[in-house]
Length: 120
Image 1 (cartoon, one colour):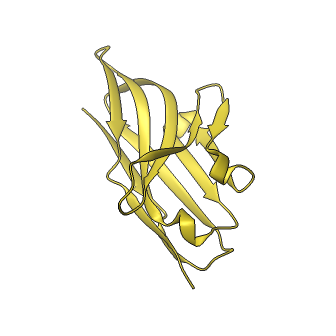
Image 2 (cartoon, rainbow, N blue to C red; image 1 turned 90 degrees about the horizontal axis):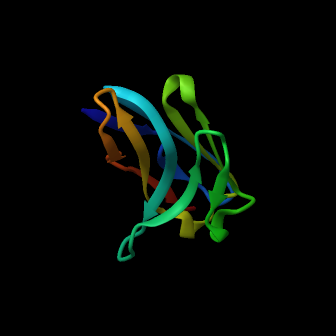
């Protein structure tokens, strides 16, 4: 059994910054890719950023140059630093991870989501 828990969401003014964190826990042997997705009201969930175990990254065009994804493998944690936030960044942000459990099962796991609201 594995679990992802996100934190760091909230209300911020346009141009402001937030840092999201997501920590995986449970019977984990190894975590491969970790990523952040977001879902705005009335829209489908979409990829924001993804990072491999060796720190290769990929970003949605809409966040390039503003958001930075990073990870700490020792802590099973992924971060999303969000700068220059815009109202269109408002969404529920979800953490995702590809996990190999301690009994060799491959699990794709999601966090519960954290709300980010960008508004004056």
